[in-house]
Length: 339
Ligand code: KG4
Ligand code: ZN
Image (cartoon, rainbow, N blue to C red; front, side, top):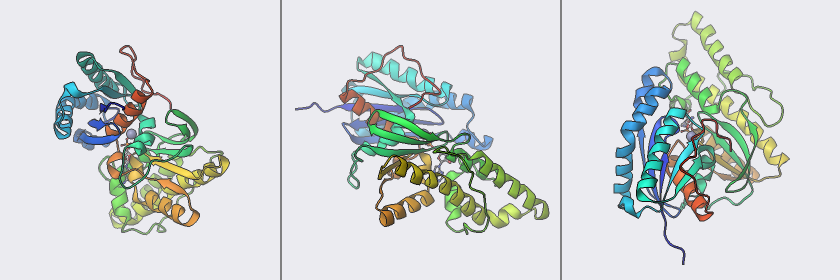
C-alpha cells in the first residue's frame, strides 16, 4: 500500500506569503499573509515585498503546521515556487524551503507558479471531479494571461498569450485611474454588479491567432475617463459602477473570444481556468453559460485557490513526488520561468 505523504507548499512569488500542508491530495491547511503595505503605492513594490516575505514566512509556516496539526518532522517533502515572479520575493521562499528541507533531510521540489494555477484543480474537492486530459488551460492573473494546451500534469504548451498587459494588470490599472485601491480587480467586480455594462463602449483589440492584447484597451479606458473628466470633474464618481461594468465586460469578452477559437482549433471541449482573475464573477457567469448552453466542460477553481496560495504549490509537489521529479539545492529561482 502507498505510504501517506505530507507535503509543505511554500509560495512567495509576488506579494502574498503563503504556506499550506497537504496530506496526499487533501489540503489540511492553507495560510496566507497578505501584504497590505503595497496599497498606498498603487502596486507591488518589489523591495518591500521581499522584506515582508522575510517577516511573514516563519509565522505563516507555524500557522499552517498548527492548523494541520502536524509536527514539521512529519513532513515528507517541501515544494516551493521557483518562478515566474519577482526575483527578490522568489529568493526568500526558495532559501527558506531549501534550508528547511536540508535541516529535515527531506526532498525539495521546484514548482512553476503558472502550472500550479492550473493544477490546483487536482486538489481533492468534494464538489467537483478533476479534469481529464487533454484540456485547454487558461491562466488569468496579475502577471500572466495564457492559453495552454495541457496534455498531462507536466506536458503543457503555451498556444496563446498576452502581447502586453495581463488581464489582472488591466483590471488593476483601470481601477487605479478610478481611484480604487490595489489590487482593484475584486473592487471592480463588486461595483460592476450594480452597473450597466452597455453604458460605455470600448473597442475589442484585433490581434491575430490566439494572442490577446490589453494595453490598448486600458489606454482607451484612461483616455475616456480623462476626456469626460474635463467636462465633469465628478465623472468618475458619478459613473463608477457603469465604468466598472463596461470595462469588466470588455476585458472578459477579449479572452472568451480567444477561448472559443482555441477550443475549435485544438478540438478541445474541456476548459480549465486558473489565476486570480478566475475569481471574477463575470468570467464565471459567461463560462457557466457556455457550459450550460454549449455543453462545454468548464472547471473553475474554488475561490481559495484562485489568487496566489500555497495549496496549489503543494498539489504540484505531491504529483512531482509521485513522479520522482525532485529538485536540487543548487537550482536557482527564475523570474521568467516558462511553462
Ligand atoms: O494569480 P494572482 O493572485 O497573482 C498573480 O500571479 O499575478 O492574481 C492577482 C490578480 C490581480 O490583478 C487582481 O486584481 C486579480 O487577480 N483579481 C481579480 C479578482 N480577484 C482577483 N480580477 C477581477 N475580478 C476579481 N474578482
Ligand atoms: Zn499567481
